Amino acid sequence: MKYFVDMYKRYVDFSGRSTRTEFWCAYGIYLAIYAVLYIIAAVAGGVSMTAITTGQAAATSIIGVILMGVLLIFALASFIPLLAIQIRRLRDAGYQWWVFLLCYVGSCLCGIGAIVLLILLCMPTKEPENQY
Image (cartoon, rainbow, N blue to C red; front, side, top):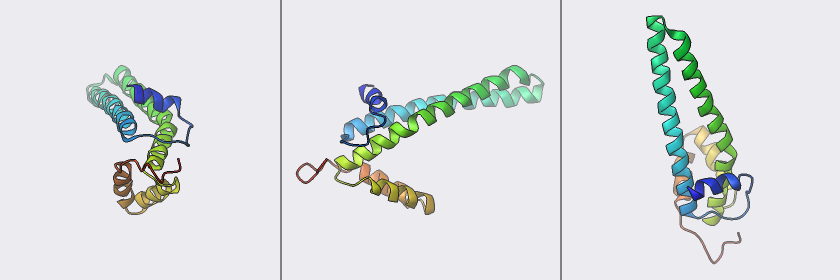
């Protein structure tokens, strides 16, 4: 949990380095929270769809919309911190920030960029020649 809190404390810190442990712990906690919120929102949305067919849509659909709003706010609030920790992790592995940009563009164009980024984020720390 410490790494997850640190990710938000250093949310605009694009300089420096983040270790594999720091990155994967923070990212894992983010994914777990996101998954739980998504499942709760999906279940509430499913209840909303059931309520629409039975004619009780007013109360339950509002709950589904509110939970999806909470999920959206969480995702938007986490965008910059996740971007920063990914760039710091790439620097720790010895890569420049623009590698992230290339992987993102490659991911949008053909989907291979996401796989390359995942591999680069798993690379070990490069101690001697790393300037960061």
